[in-house]
Image (cartoon, rainbow over all chains, first blue to last red; front, side):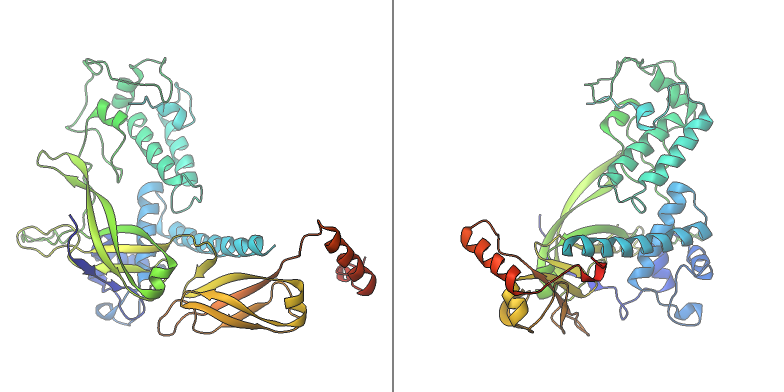
Amino acid sequence: MIEDILTGIILNEENTLTLNELSRACMVHSEWIIELVDEGILEPKGEEITHWRFSGTCLKRARTVRRLQQDLGVNLAGSALALNLIDEIEGLRARLNEQEKSS
Amino acid sequence: MEFKDYYKIMEINKDASQGEIKRAYRKLARKYHPDVSKEADAESRFKVLGEAYEVLKDPEKRAAYDQLGSNWKSGQEFNPPPDWNANYEFSGGDFASGGASAFSDFFESLFGRQNRGTYSGSQRQGSNFRSQGEDHHAKVMIDIEDAFHGATRAFTLHAPKLNSHGHLVTQDRTLKVQIPKGISQGQQIRLSGQGTPGTGGGEKGDLYLEVEFKPHSFYRAEGKNLYLDLPLTPWEAALGAKVKVPTPAGIIDLKIAADSGAGNKLRLKGRGIPGKPAGDLYVILQISLPSGNTQKAQKFYRKMEQELAFNPRARLGV
């Protein structure tokens, strides 16, 4: 059955998540998110923890780290490294696609 | 139902030690992890690998599986013998622990369906029984045009659920969702209250939809910018021209400067995905050559050869 049309909000620079919302979205305790911030994996806006605001990119990164930890047993530092490498590979792959298309 | 050769899936011999099994799993898991691997079938391979490891890492389950005999081949039609696991002792009430998604029919025919309790961090502390429902996540595919104009799209999502017997089943539900104009590749839409219902009057969880663009026949998206390859004739590129170009907002006339080259990039400001600020549309020029397969064309090319002094390889020093 198709229900009413749902309207959501896009997570972007304006619509962000609080520490509690991000913890819940990743199904983790907030302490775990704080560790990710300490490791430099997530960069929330705002100084105080109570004012932290996380972007949609933070949500994606946090969930990736969670999967890497659960599935591969990677620690935080290793996850941070893996994230950087994944980003870099994606960038290179996009450029490679460009090159292949225009040649 | 097809027989699954868990040893073959894990690329190990039947007499592999428990240590070898663990090492093989770690090695293949790194290779096929969907976050890391770009192989097209990474997700399904990772899933079946998890299932194989679930069985082989556990000496009890492994023994029961081995007892099926070694004559089975992967993919062969399979029905478990009625007494297949008689006399095998299993510790604990259930077999499985990890794994995010349901295992294959083959697995379930042997070891039953289980509730593989997913880790939940949803506000459980204290003596308060009111708990908020879990948040859900799903990836959905939309057309670039939907992001450009906004649209309403129906998505059928498959969610694992516990039925009244505590068994894990997949339940489909169809949601009609407003795609906000200006959403870009990889962004997420948060639908509040569309996750798991809470207990004890707790709030419902939310649903996060990650949006991905379907491949388009001529646009490519990067963030809010769009890219389009535009083929030109050699004379359009050389002499300059006004050519028609598709944009998501409709066809426009684009002025091509004289002496344009292949690979030149023209930026049409604000004609990418809408927003504040809107993305740009980049037009990348390409030059298409008329085929030389007619006498007329050959004569023409011959004339160009004679009259235009042109060495495209000058930079190569040849």
